[in-house]
Length: 167
Ligand code: PNS
Image (cartoon, rainbow, N blue to C red; front, side, top):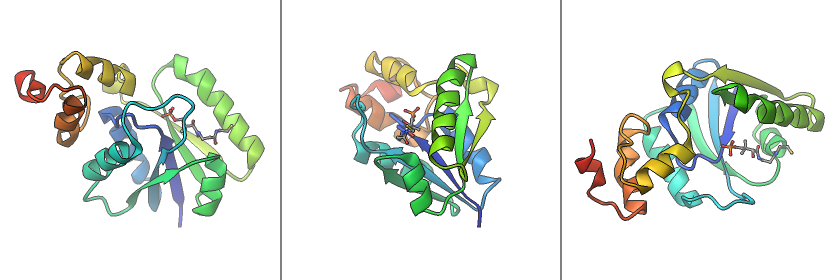
């Protein structure tokens, strides 16, 4: 059984993440979307919110599990008998950081592979931070995040009517 892990902060999940999740789920038996608990920089959305956004988005998917992890990713991988880390690459600017991460993880556990997927060109400009910035100013986030979480993102910023005003 090939178990892959797609790790991240998902603050919040975007359609760019979802694109990688959908493609990765096709090439493994089970995909674990692993949400990082501890961050030096506190995420905008709570762990519960980030997990709930993912679970609602991926509700009907049988070979996808949403889990949380803290500490080292490779330890979580070993615990879950996972072999491969899935990462999405948007632009050259992502490469340096991801290259370092992949080598650090390889150094920690040589059995674990990191597999990079190029983002869909339509989402190459998209990031969680851009979604937060837009939503905090009441900008339109439709088509950037899954429809089922749009209302809750606006709510976070006290912009309850935004989802209907701007779409
Ligand atoms: O969505 P992000 O913020 O780019 O995700 C980063 C993440 C969670 C993949 C990365 O920070 C991570 O793997 N953190 C766990 C700690 C770890 O194992 N670090 C790598 C080796 S030092």
